[in-house]
Structures are given as structure tokens and as C-alpha cells.
Image (tube, rainbow, N blue to C red):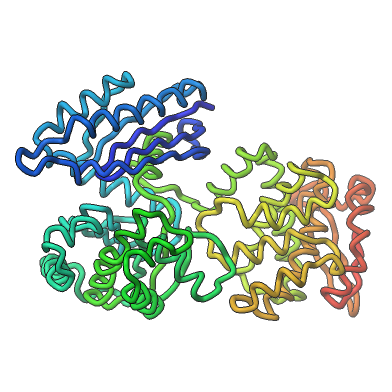
Length: 508
């Protein structure tokens, strides 16, 4: 495993992202530092130069970042600068001086490279088949249309949350009209498939999501994957329009810079909603830095996305937490065998297999903190994990399913917090999945490959689970003695099984 540092000089900030990487396999971000410096706002109007004072501020921050890298023993470096900086006449000498200050060469990204980095971030973190990615930065808005994980069209509009009002001489109505005229130049934004989701990928959308969740008293504090509607966006937009700048700066959960630019940024997003007629919105928590690290750590993502978003994220969570990735996989395989064999009893649709997958892969997270009553820790650990490719509801259900083994230990007080996004049927599903997980843990007791398969017979009020210990195409072997350890422990949950499934269980 190597440590990789990504230095970014943007138009409004300087950012350092540190990640643990295994080349060709994965990366895991463990630290992000960002300083607002507003470089574009300080270009001298009369000669178009970045001021020497601003250059000094940037190099000072970069040197501090480099010292952090040295202390962290970073071995790999990437240094990039935003394309919008080329508006300054001295951008080349600026990036050269920045690079010399830390012994790195800063590469100016092309507009196409910036677009691809944003797309790479989104397509590898959200499971949305058809989407319009809208990235509202300070000086540019990028719109990317994709379907089946392939880019179809993209547009780069030269107005962002900071520059829109500046270019319209601080006149909001003229500013919005300018942006609408730019949208009209791109034919692909007309007649979109109604199933297309608008994916909001920038601070403007993250800030909107935080405000929207507070207004709705939404119980899940996760930016990534927050799903809402154009109508909900409109309500928050009306609320923001009613606030002056001072009141916007007091909004909780958003930065001072976001408070200053959120109104113009939401004007842009509102114009896109109205122009396209799209009705649904999903928030993306990551940005350009995520995409660049995907490309650096896993070069194949330059050509194709990660095949299994959820599986990839579950694996890197395991690696970062220090749990056994292969044992987690085996836990899921056994749990899935039980899930399939007991389908006639639990009657849960296939979609719950995703909840089962998350809960079983992350079932050992709590043990990293304390092996005693680790299930209670599981709830908080799963809710705090950077799970990709899953909805908020799926994460919540998985967290609860992995949080108890006995129904008497279920935390109803916590469950009530989610009453607006969960149902009684889902509570019953969580109860059944929890028993399946508890039994799967027992059947994987020796962290080996003892159980090869499971078959199920339902006879009246009883369920007989037959554990296959050796696979033979002629006669699969059911050896009770070979699995006596697993059977002994699994039988401890016979009582809970009866309560959840309304039938007795016997293991052979």
C-alpha cells in the first residue's frame, strides 16, 4: 500500500487530498485539506495578472501541505491546476512558481480532462443508469449526459456560482437570462428520457441537500446519494431567495463561501431543471479529486468504470478497517444461501439481497472497536461508512439488521427516528435478515469453507436445513459431525427463528 497526495489549485481554493492506494485495486481517502484563496477574484483588472501577494499566499499553503506529506511519508504525487486559471496572463509563471515551491510540476487540466474527472467520480460512486450530471463550480458549469455508463454529450457553460452575477453586473434577472441562452445552444438537453436523473455534483448541491434535510427533518446525515425531487428543490430555492446574505451565512452545515454563492448557484440549477423538465435529483458527495484519484490508482477507469460499485466500496471499507475481506465475502455467501433457501418463508423480494450484502460484508466492523456486543457498534459503524452504490434507505436497513441478534435487543427508540422513510413491512424484513445474519455467522464460525451448500425442506411446522459439507456431483455429502461446531452455535438462535419465521428449525 502506498500513500498518494493530490495537490489541486482551483480558481477559489487550494486543496490537498491524501489517500492510501493499492495500484490497480483501490484507494481510500483519509484526509482532505482545503483553503479558500479566491485566485480568480484577485486577478488585476487592468493587466490581467495574478497578484504577487496572492501567489505568495498560494505557495505558503502548498509548502505547508508538502510538510504534511513528508510527515505522512507520501511516496506518490499528482499536482494539477484548473483550466480557468489560464485566463490570467501570467498563469504559466504562476504554476511554475507553485511547482518549484514544493518540487512538483503542476499540470493544467484541459476542459475535457476536468469533465472526465467529474464523470469518473460520479459513475464510480452512484448507481444511476441514466443521468445528467450538473457540476456548478465557481466559474464554470459542466453538464454531462450519460446512459449505461457511457458519456453521450456534454456542455461547458462559462458561468458559475461566483462569476454569473459578476458578468451580469450583479443583476440577477439578467444573469439567469444569460445562462438560459447558453442552455438553449445545446440540443441534447431537449426531449430527455423522463427516467433521466439530474445528478448534482458540487458544493451548491451539497449545501442544498443539507438545508433540504434540515427543513424536512430528514433523519440521515449523509450527503452522498441523497435523493429528492425538483419540487423539493423549488421549496428550498424559495427559502434561500427570502434570506439576505447575513442570514444565509448563519445557515448550519454550509461554508461561508457556499453561503455567499448558493443563491446564484441555485439559480443555475433551477434553470437546468426548468429547461430539461427533469423531476428527480440525487446529490453526489464527491468531485474532481475523486475522479483523478480513481484514474491515478486504477488506470483502467480511464477506459471503463468500476464494474461493481457497491462491492468495491465494501472491500475498501474492510481494508481500511482491518477486517478480513475474504471472511466478509464468505459470511455473505452463507447468508445469501440461507436467504435463498428460506425465500418461501420470508417472502422478501430480491431487492433485500442488497441490504443483506451490505450488512453481512460489514458485520465485523463493530468487532474492530469491541468484540463484546459488537452488533450495537455495527449500527453506528455502518451508518458512518462511505458506502457507494446504495440508497440511504438500504444503508439504514442494513445498519439495523446488523445491530442485533435477539429481538429484545432491537433499538426501537432509534428506529422511530426513521418513521418517515421506513415502513412496518421493512421492520419485519430487518428482523428476518438479522436472524439470517446471526445464523450465517455461526455457520462461518471457524472462518473456513466448512459449509459448501445449504438445502431446505419444509415439513408442516418445521424447517429442516441440511448443511452440505462436501460437494460431489453424484451425491453431495451431509456430514453432521463435520459441521457440529457450526450446528451447535446456530441452534442457539432456534427460538429467535421461530419468532421471526413462525416455524421450528432443525439443522442437519
